[in-house]
Structure formats: structure tokens, C-alpha cells
Image (cartoon, one colour):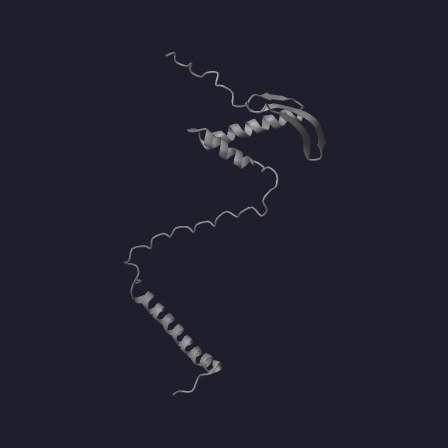
Length: 158
């Protein structure tokens, strides 16, 4: 049996081998580039690799106790889903113009009467440096209870 090799002896044994291998590969590479074309030049190109998949979206750090906030991006996604056949860029332009007009009208103190939304009135307006604070009140009708359909078909006599 051979005696075990100490770590320092292992390092000493690897160094000359690594240096010798590196020097011979450099010599081979220099000789090969001068004398003959690259051995890989006749092979077809490597296929492109797919980009790595993005990691899953991070879950919210803390669940909110109250109602969630709808962002402009979320609003755009909802409107785009409801408008089939309309390009996203057109939806974005209309949405931006609508939000700008609503914001300007609210800052000016105007009220809105929109059947789908309700009546929106400005309660208070306070201009501050770099912003306008507008407190609004929205009044909406409650959805009707399960009443009879006014357009229901009449019962057949029979």
C-alpha cells in the first residue's frame, strides 16, 4: 500500500502538470492556426439557445386589509380585454386622453354625471407645491334587486 498524500504534496504535484498542459495547448493552438484552418469550421453553427424564463412574479409582501388599488396598467389591461379588435396603442391613446380630461375637469371643480359611474362631485380642492389635492364624492345607485324583467315574454294562453 502507498502512504496517503498530504494536501501540500498534492498541490506541488498538480502545479507542474497544469503548467505543462497550458504551455502545450498554447503551442498546439498557435501551430494549428498557422498551418491548417480551424477543425470546427466545417461544422454547422450552433443553434441559438432560448432565453431563460423569467422567474414567477413575486407575491405581494403583505395582503391588504381594504380594497385593492387599480393602477393605470391594470385599467389598461381591463379596457383592452373588453375592446376586441382595437389595437393596444389606440386604447392607450384614448385612455390617456380620457384620464387627462377627467383630471383637468376635477381640478377645475367640475362635476360629472356618468350613468355607468354615477355622479362625481368635487368636495374640496387644495393646490399644494407640485400637486393638487382634490377630494371627491361619488354617488352611485345601488344595483336593482331581482325585479321582473320588463322585457320578459308574456305567458302563453293555453
